[in-house]
Length: 147
Image 1 (tube, helix red, strand yellow):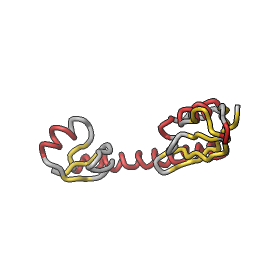
Image 2 (image 1 turned 90 degrees about the vertical axis):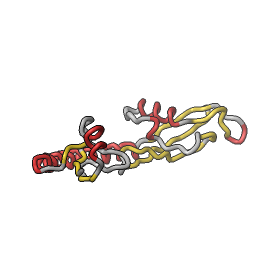
Image 3 (image 1 turned 180 degrees about the horizontal axis):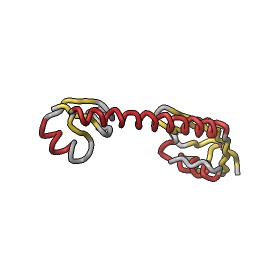
Image 4 (image 1 turned 30 degrees about the vertical axis):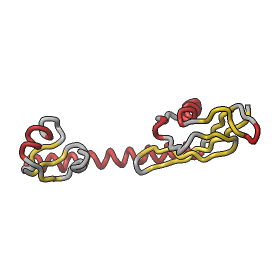
């Protein structure tokens, strides 16, 4: 059976794609949950309208994400931590600390969107990547200074 996906379905496809699935999967899972509809003429017309709306939403989201990325790229934050010899921190600076500093600057970012491979354990200047949108990434400048 051919269905039109109304929402992204992992392992199956993205919004607007026409895919072939088993009848039971379509009738028992996809259609009742609103993930898909039958691929007939009426639904194809709805699909065209839905795709126009989705494209407009994507453009708007991309524009907002780009503007937010520019703001984050211009932002520099600092974190004060106690440090011992050789500029090693007692503790570390984590993505949660960075998210809190950005929030203090008026930029709300989910801590899971901050891409630290490992917590920062030394004093210095770091460029920390922040994922704003699947296609847009920014970098905030972080100064870790001695308390």
